[in-house]
Image (tube, rainbow, N blue to C red; front, side):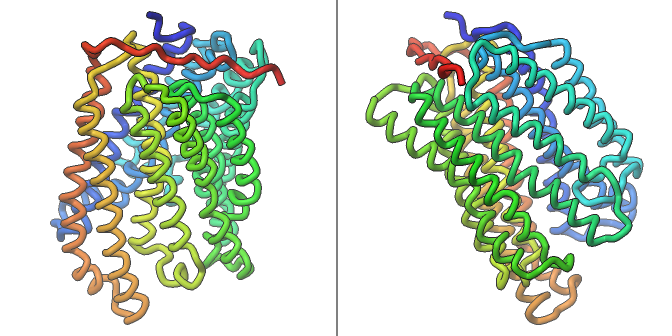
Length: 457
């Protein structure tokens, strides 16, 4: 049985492999950061490999492997969705080489102090320019594939809009502004409107396609949530940026509007999964590889809890006044990023990589262990960071105790976080080992329902 419909889909495999390698590096750097919080390290060691360098590698490898997953996933789903080969596999490979070269050079540069010093956007301008070139190649390849498609669907245009907006927002983080308030105003245009805007649209588009293919549910069921996602993006993604405007002199109303609206963004994806689950129950259509469905449901639950509920409680102005920038932010960030985007990428990998290897049904025992270990460990890690953040907020911002003194009382919880992080790393390694060594199952594979593209629009 042929497992992929178009040969150009194979270009995505290298995107997936490199993303997984960067995922490991990101987790290892996260463990090193927790060690810095949990123990007093010798100054000689700190001088050689400071906390700031580890944080730069941790956050930038996060962005890099997320984007590689998005790009690879886009290149995998576009050919069958457009019913044609990619416009150019050469462009896809060239884009990959440029992007990875810039990312690797950035990591090496961080080790030698080559950084802009701008939190989360530390990559120097020359490397930023290379990333922009890679992004333009990506948009051009996606756009030309869609333009030349035999049919046009809402999913195609939503995906193109998401990746275009993703690249456009990145430009606002490249220059420095003399006024610090202005600089951070546009800084949030990247940090927030990437994560809670463009990435949400890309997530919804890719999830819609995977859900259709995995379950056989009708296109109209999932595409209607794409329209909802667009509407909520316009009314919540942009307005929700305001919950970050706490210390930059913006009008007070931005805090309430931002805090409330930003919590609504995950709802379309959650509703899409719930609606699909109801259709699957009604149709009793067996799923070929249940592990993919585990990741879909896990993504929806984590997305709602980590990005939605936890974010909502944390960003309400009376609470955010005290918790802003504390370890509670770290708790929300880990749960939200893992739930919304790490699980999305792993869903893509478990959906596409078996097919790219010619496997219809695979042994999933190790994959299930990896799923449960990582999801449970990350939930516990979020709770531990949350406890440390509540303690930090009370000591520093209610009792006005100094940071260093408060840090001494938090060290126990960071030692717990380090232990939980080791468990999480074990789950990540198990998952990645399983993905790289997938083997066909002895049980006969069920026939997957192939969903045709929608009528031309």
